[in-house]
Amino acid sequence: MCVISIIVPIYNIEKFLPCCIDSILAQTFTEWELILVDDGSKDTCGSICDEYATKDGRIRVIHKPNGGLTSARNGGLAMASGEWVMYLDGDDWIEPEMLELLLQKGEETGADIVMGDSLFAYPDRDVPYRFPDWDDCKITSLNRYITSVWTCVWGGIHKRSLYEEHQLQSPQGVTYCEDFHLIVRLCYFARKVANVHRPFYHYRQQGGSVMHNLNKKTECDEQWVYQDIIRFFKEQGVYEDYRKTMCWRMLKSTQELVLERETWKDFLTMVPEKKHYIWDCPYINLKLKFNMWCLTHHLSWISRLMLNLRKLRHGRI
Image (cartoon, rainbow, N blue to C red; front, side, top):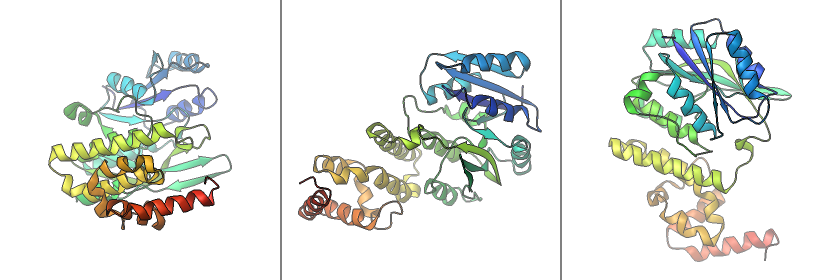
């Protein structure tokens, strides 16, 4: 059995794929398997994967009909045989010492998850991002992670036993916040999470990515993910430990619903207890907070007035 299984979902990224694979081949730690999941690419990604596989026996290739990112990740996970699992998107790349240093940290600490830091790779600059620290208090650490800007399955390594023991995988058909859905569960079940604060993972920024093209589908996906995590915490009997931070997330994901009278009912009925956390929510501005507070305290006439003033300013009345 190899030590780490690296799963790379791939779709129409022929321009960037060799850089990704070459960064894995350049790792100082060599006991890995690379699972390249060609998710129905229409360009030359499939042949690029096959060509690399003929040159290195550690590389395995899956060719499948297009099913989206989560489908590709789950397909790779089903084939994984390593003690650890790592996800790497096919248009990103990693530093040569990433595997060696993350695994070393895992062995030193007995952690089930080890997270590195990342670099947001823009065409003209790199912007470092430091992931939140984890300590021995899981509730405090997980709440800190839930409130952080980025919650990603990439950038770290996870014990494969977490997936097997708790039947975890990425949510099928979800195109936004799918990482949050999985990583929160992984961190909850992990006995220990550790950090290595070095920027190993280069997260390529592209205008055509989902993160840069948010729409009604991504908005609904985000709301569903947060509600499902709340359901999960309730099943585990720990919702009160994470109620505040999850309500903050729900307020963030439902803020657009406040801006149209037709969706006020949806805002009010979706996790109603979020109304108790409006004023200290870190994700939304003061004007929206006031609007939300009015809606949740039977002062909708003020919300209607604010909405009409907003439409007037934008020439919609």
